[in-house]
Image (cartoon, rainbow, N blue to C red; front, side, top):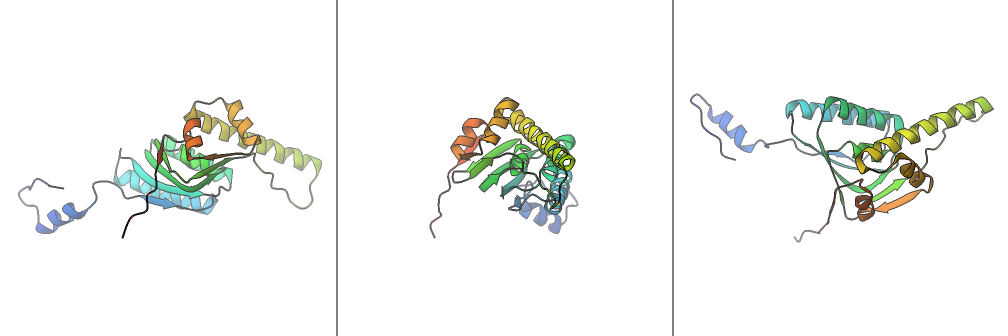
Length: 194
């Protein structure tokens, strides 16, 4: 990268400008979706968005899924703050991890990435009343609806279709995810020669 030299620029300033990246470096997120992992991801995404306003923030992710609430929190934060994410998925993107992926302005996946849509599971204590069970079922239904709305907003698919896919426990490869509209591009992984 060539820079114009201004009078008064120190040699150190010119050296730093030559070796510093032009944009943000990738964030790596290969974790289960939990409160503490999402807090760390939010912090890093916001930090880079403040350092590089208006730029796409690269995020490399893969996750077995996890809790819905932290994933929805991340999605809403990114959308509310206008943070632009360029997300590449690797490995697997299951369940609530789809919400993280859907926060991306650009969404790609390696050709070997696998995706899973499934119904929300109930987390019940050992002793449950019928009222507790009904309340938890209502929460699960609301989470499913929220996930379906988020996925539907990027795919153009109706919410009812996304919920149907969830209840069918739909597994997708990268090409299937692209056909559904979850990702925009499939990247071929090629082993580098030594």
